[in-house]
Length: 129
Image: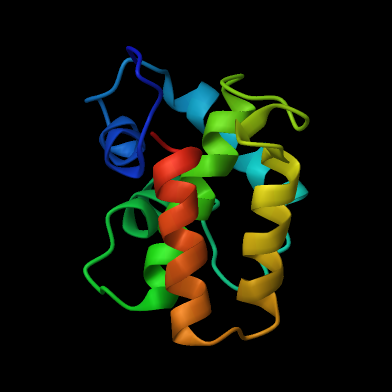
C-alpha cells in the first residue's frame, strides 16, 4: 500500500483476494490482532476472514452501524499495520487509543444513530485519511 495511509476503501481492496500488495497471511494476522484488541470485533461484528472483513469494509448498507464498523475496522487495520501507535495524536490532543475507545463505547453501548455517524465521520476524517 502506498501513502496516504489507508482508508476503508483501500483496505477493502487489500482484502480482495490477489488484488492487494499484502499477503493473505499478513492480512489474516492483522485481522486476528484487531479481533483480539477490539470490543466490537468479533462480539458484534465478525471480521475474522478476508471475505468477512471485505464485507465490513465495503458494506452495501449505509446504516450508521455499518459505517462505524467500516471505519473502526480500518482504524484497527491502520494500527496493526503500524501507521499509528496507541498514543499517536490523530487530531489535536486526541490519541488513537482515545478515538477508537470512544467509537467502540458508542458501538457497544447502542449509541444513537446520530452518535454512531458522528464518531464514524471523526474516524474517517482524522484516523483513516
